[in-house]
Image 1 (cartoon, rainbow, N blue to C red):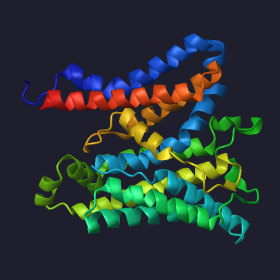
Image 2 (spheres, rainbow, N blue to C red; image 1 turned 90 degrees about the horizontal axis):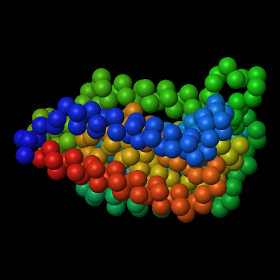
Image 3 (cartoon, rainbow, N blue to C red; image 1 turned 45 degrees about the horizontal axis):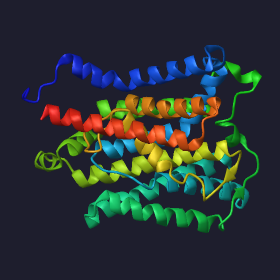
Image 4 (cartoon, rainbow, N blue to C red; image 1 turned 180 degrees about the horizontal axis):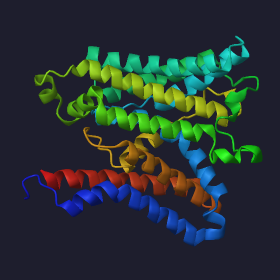
Length: 326
């Protein structure tokens, strides 16, 4: 027993583990595929674009998981957001910026409902968000009249599209820059604001946080609202990826990828432990695995087995760290 103390090298390994895992996976595929095909800027740009939807939604999931909660409705929120944006553009003739804002707002309202149900009914978040997963998906299908909604072409379609030659100076599409800016803002919020400190306190020890005067219920409502708002932004990215189509049946199972990104990045499902940088690395690991398997011609079912094994290993390592620190 070490009295809860962690050796310096172990602490550094815990912090750098996800990044080292990303480097190892990237180098493995470089060796299998060949650097001339794998380590190209075009391939890296594709990986970053594929990371954006899961990565953006995972930023919100990071906040929820840090607070000791869970949100299973992220995929349904993404589908609802894309459908809201498409419907407002196609049927109401809204300005693209206003339609995008409405899609994000729809996601935030779903998160507000999740937060209020969790705090007012005192029902565990797993059950609440499992129920809202179905309810929000149903609302998306009802809004879209149980079919895809084709919106007129606007600049929203270009957010996540591969850059044309005349805009190569941007390096990556606007959607990737949006994800990176949101990651920086989220990291700053966690580090420098009262909400960030209270969020960690609630996730680490909720009864102690209450005794210290933290408004636990307000923190939880704020966290679930922000988390779903990030999923709404991911819905905007999905809308761009689909080239202006709102599909209420899309993003089924996305919430599992989102949670996996947080866990692979070092987040603890027990709450109080995780980071924005780790989550981004976790999302990148999943995107790299999928891109590499695709280029190698590996079947989807094998990709799912590999990803599932990585998730189980990440959770097992997290539990091992907690037992050794106890």
